[in-house]
Length: 108
Ligand code: FES
Image (cartoon, rainbow, N blue to C red; front, side, top):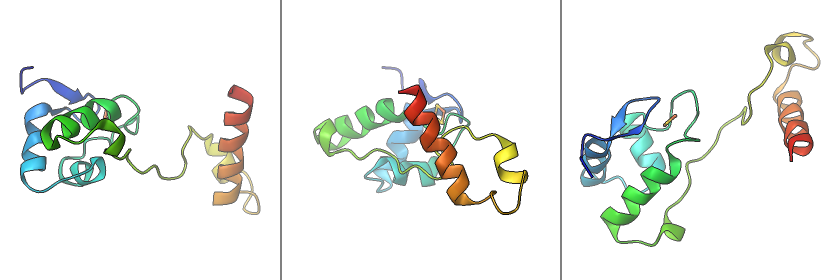
């Protein structure tokens, strides 16, 4: 595959940039994320995770099962701003988490 192929569409990171990060010592997705911003775009790595993991697996020779997924941070789901600003007592990390969890429960 052409090294200029874009893997992370949100941050426009290509295969060559990921391999450069691997050569610089990156071992997992989060290392590459810190070095390149890959996975930090609006989709929060939903699109690029497995492509990057495949590149890491091919580069390191490790099986895919040994390549970690990127760590997710709150909010882990799209969150309505109203949850954050509506009421000081309910606008907390806990309420954001509850909304995220309830969306997961209702959406499957
Ligand atoms: S495609 Fe990588 S963050 Fe969206």
